[in-house]
Length: 282
Image (cartoon, rainbow, N blue to C red):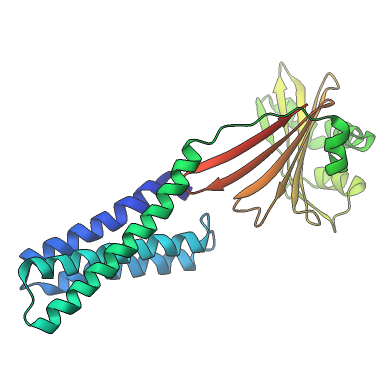
């Protein structure tokens, strides 16, 4: 699941719902005080389930911030209900006021940080800068389209799996090397399996012919994903995504593209609700 699509609900809806629940129960359900613990247990269960999940699409630090805001919303709703009803004694009134002050301040600071990030992201614009092929290749020489790239694509085009896929007539065929020994054998012939992980290969078919073919590998030494695409006309496109951190999360990366000799570099960073892009063209 892509949690970025529901971040506004997590960040704003969760604390608001918890606040309203605690306020309403504290004011109107004095005989059913156990209802105050329902959102507390729900929040703890949600955090535990996410921590136990094998797939994390959000940084755990960000989730803890959301959980902290949710807890602040609960405390603020509970303490406000006590203040509106009046405490049982002087000590309790002072204690509840302290809780209300601290929880309200925590919510204000937390939301202030998030909103400031939102304002920066909302006013961010794409930046273009001319960049030469030599400059890009100096940064990442692997982006150069080599004879080896052409040989791999040529061998894949002649492989039994690709030929069978073309004969099948489907417009797009996915050929993961794990399921096609001939594809894996070709990649292993040209590439070191100790360094590269063979992720994917595929072919586009039109009118009974392979019009384009690609292979997708992961460079484990450089923490980079490499995709090479070749058209039947000999036109080649090569893209390399260099990750900063866990590539499964794809939170921050630099994407280099070599479009048959025309190069560009894109910086992508995902923060809060938006993706940031900075593009350099050449």
